Every structure is written in structure tokens, then in C-alpha cells.
Length: 320
Image (tube, rainbow, N blue to C red; front, top):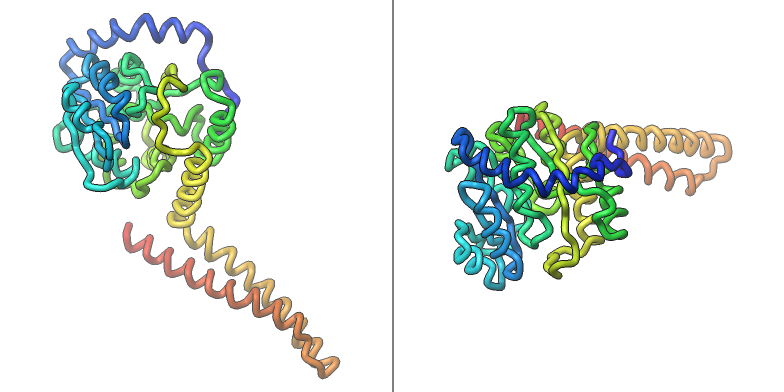
């Protein structure tokens, strides 16, 4: 299971990250065996996106910036820095941006896709650390992990909660990190299966990877906080949004277990109160209003939940 307090990186990792990335990048570029795309979903990131694109171009074949309804000059700055830009006509969410990146990567026959943020928190110089495992064939999905010491206190709390909720039986250290590498198999798997359009996409990807038996790897990264005030999502609302999306995803995948079964249990409680209602009426001739209300409050919602669970389970089976 996941352990949010685990610190996989030893102090030497900080030194290794800075020393080997350039050598690895040259090796990967010269191998000619793997075409790599870096995709950066953006919402109003004109302050940092130019630097991100220029640095990322040193390690990949192409940089793709997804303009998710930006109201500033993000798209222009990205193009001037040498990126390909896909523009959504309106803000559609980070998840939709990742779907656009997946579609572009598959349609253009890329072997590896790097996903990273456009606010400057992720260091493009560490791209080779993630690509290495994909290139070696030891992982299908590689996720960067941040040590707790790199993160502000309020982010540590949110990450710990989301890591536990998102673990889904995996041993991933940092479930919410958006800096990750996908091979071709993972791209194709995610493209047809991702449903959410919000910030819960990272967690949904882990769920899909486990269901598809994809190999998940990790690589230590250095995440920068505080350089730019470019965050487009309040950490509290971000956490609530992710938790809410995961809740509905869980229900949607197994509606009979998470809706129908609880509904059946509530119905049994309602039947118990209804029997006591009948017994009280037969013994006293008076209508026990309290027991009748309790029975109704359990029987009616319980029956609705059971029927809803059955219908949704049938819909899920038909989709499959």
C-alpha cells in the first residue's frame, strides 16, 4: 500500500539528478530508437512557459503546449519559443488537455510522451530521468516523486490525503505528481479510458494502469515552489475536486457494490422498522407514527438506491 510519509530518495539523489541528466539526454537523442514528445497543458502561464519550452526542447523531439482557453499570451510565447500549440476554444480542464496531448502523440507516432506543468515547477532538465525507464523497457508509466521536504506544509497535508485515497492497491509514492512519462502502450490505454476532465486525471491514470497491468516506475525529481505565482487552482479546492471526482469514479465503475448493496442494507433496516410498526399497531390499535416514518425513510431511499445500482450496473456491462 502507499505510504505518504515514505521518502524514497536518499540525499545522493539530489546530486545524481543534476549530474547525469545531460549525459543521458545526449545518449537518448543519439540512439534514434525512440521519438519523444513533451506535452504541457496550460492555463495562463505566460510568465514561465517560454523558459519551460526552451529547456524541454533540448531533451525531446517536439514540445506541445495545450492552450486550455488562456486569456493571456501563453500561446504566443509558447510558439515564439518553438512549441507546437493546440488551443481549446474554452477552458475545458487539465484532463481534457492531457487527452489532447495523448491524441496528438498517438496520431504522430511518438514512442514516449512526457507530461509536465507549465508553471515552472517541473525542471525540464530532469526529463531524461523519466525517459530512461521507458527507453530501457522496464516501465510503461514513470511518475516523478517529490520528497515532502520540497513541499510547503499545506501541500504536504493535501498530498498525504490524496495519496492514500488514490493508491488503489499500488505502492506509488507521489500519486499527484503531473511530471510523468508514458510509453506507446500506456498512451493508447489511457486515450480510450480516461473519463475525467479535471485535476483528478493523475489519480485516474493510476487506476487505469493498475487495471491494465501496466508497469509503474518512479524517478526522483526536484519540484520548485514559490518562483512564480502561477498556480491556477487553490490547493483546498483542488483537493476537494479530486476527492469528489474519485468518489464518483469509484461509484461509476462498481455501482452495484457502492450503490445497490448499501441500498439493500437500508431496505432491510426499513423492513425491520415496518415489522415493528405492524406489531405495535396490532397490539395497541394505535398507529405508531414514529416507526412508520422511520420505515418509510429507509424503505423508499433504499429501494431507489437498489434500483439505481442495478440499472447502472447494466449500463456498465453494456458499455464493456
